[in-house]
Image 1: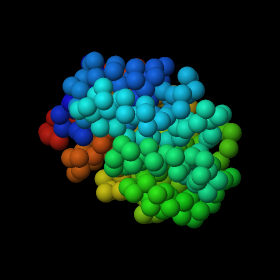
Image 2: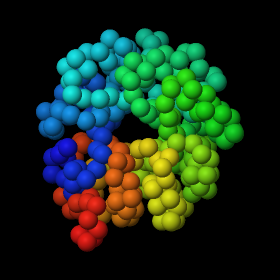
Image 3: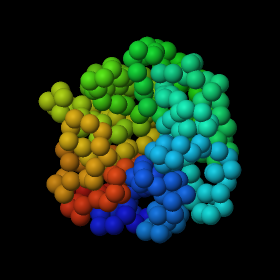
Image 4: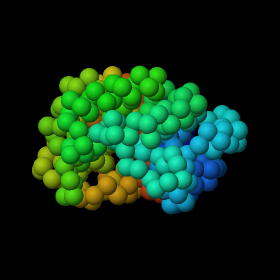
Length: 275
């Protein structure tokens, strides 16, 4: 799989996954078509809620069937809180499993199974909605419902409300919890900025864990999740990604930069002599 435009990532060494979150102003159909136009039309694409939000378009089996018919060599998986009805969108995540079981998670699971997807990932959610014990219990219920692993994506500090998995301590808890994980390195950049540091040993443990099912890449200013293009200089977390890919050759890595473009400064390779 080649990189989208000038790339410092050697995708030939990575189980690369394209994410429609990189093209949030486009519909799902437009985003997938754009990805195929600049890439070998094979491999996995993660369908993200941003692409339906602007048009207030629900995700349906009919829409998924159209995508698969137009892109038969692609596989698809779902991420996070998609709009599932014509009614106002509902914010749901790992902290609201019980509250939104019927209205959100059961229909989402039907779409997941319709795609025959192997993983679903969602955000950790809000501390006001569930304790950590309740969160873990809810994710276990989801895995039974979805018939696959459900990966919890860690978050970052927010001024508006307390979020689960938003501190170094929270990420240590996630690592020890036994839950499957999606590690977004732009979120960790915010944690590091707020706390002044992030333990690289913990980062290695998170990325190299067999329960880490996705790694998300993008950039921000350390204050908000902005999905910016990756900077020309190697990010502080880059060598940890290289080590993780070397240890886990099939680790899925997603580029979520808004323009789906990365800068030509490094190559991600299992050959560590280059670093």
